[in-house]
Length: 587
Image 1 (cartoon, rainbow, N blue to C red):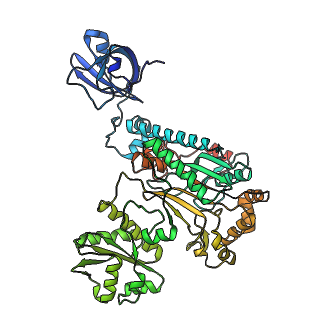
Image 2: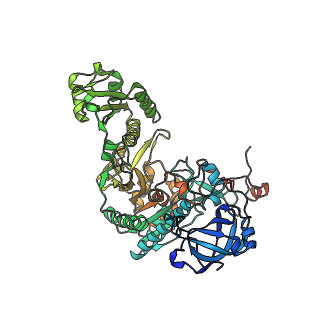
């Protein structure tokens, strides 16, 4: 090794020892006779002192040093002079009196300072990611990610799981997000797809008698991006044979317990609470509720269905819902503040936001004349409103009403500071609908994916093809602080049931054979009952480090436009390459 020690390990126990350090020049301070630099590597920072008394040549050489020069320094560990110690640093009690200096590589002036408190655009950070990753925060994030992966591997190994790598180049099975396609040179006109998940292969592994599989899997989805999405992402992928939902919950909770304890030192209480999908929607308006605070939604459709306010009553007649929330202590909101909230819910498709102020034991509003005293009293009681509170309501189609009010609830949770930012609230959401109706395609589609098994109590409805919106699945999501961190289901293992699901969502026998024939063929040879779950590693890491964007826990992420500023990918390719792939671009 070129070095005897790292820049993060030297303490007063090393005083008078001669050491050799290598690293990057962080900062340089010239005090005339004395020159100081902060030498930084992946493990920490050590102060180095250059004095002409220990050699004019090395002192003169130190004058050349600039930020991010790569150097090798040999010297003796000394105690810092009294009053210059830095107890906040592990190496803050010592410095190195340099005896020799070798500049291993010079550096251009970086576009931003390599420090944690930088003020620079994310675009710039991603363009110079190799510099951004030198920052101690990013170094810690990547090392913590490594630690989480090791903890997971150790956990699954102890439980007898087998890690199996599944193909990256696979078959396109369009049902869900868009595939990333890869043209085949040796099969002109044919394409591979990058896997959206290892779903079909891990089910094939269950048919192959690998009854406990896991993988730290790379997945790809061509979808609209946001802070918690990337075109390529990583998940802890799990599948087991001869299991029920309870077995999946137990294994998953054990994994979370090990990860949170080993990675960030937090002891989790298991088992986690469980909440049925229907109840989650009625109480929180979404299937990934943040349960760190109350402020739950209340449906008042039945209370106001006969009211004289036609905006409400007409929506109810059309099958809509009226959802309300009690913003505690917000009765003094100004007209401007209310208008701001109206614009906020409109972003989620709502047409407006009515409000009722609780004062003098009753409700007051610009629209209260359209409601009887009994109706106003019933609304007040349903929301447990007290003087000084403000009740907000949205009346619209169920999905729009729930989406708008769920988002409003989150907004009030932050605005009223109801959330304990240090808490981690886990909850299983279960019994999702098996199908959802696509207005765009005018057909039923799978809520999760078409390999999810049906709730045994609802199989009759499925077979009759009636009330499909009420058919429940054997699926489950793990939610932490309002973020879906994992999703899974008990799978279909019988060909007959799988074919019925395909038929229900409009996939013909011919299409099913073309897309999923290899899975259906495998089912003919004795597929065991099986189920699994996958957890988003990137989203878990954001919780561990307390950041808002998964781009801070991925070494080389893409922007929200799926672009890499560092490599300029995606990019054009040579005409020769296109010809080899039998591809002609349409300009």
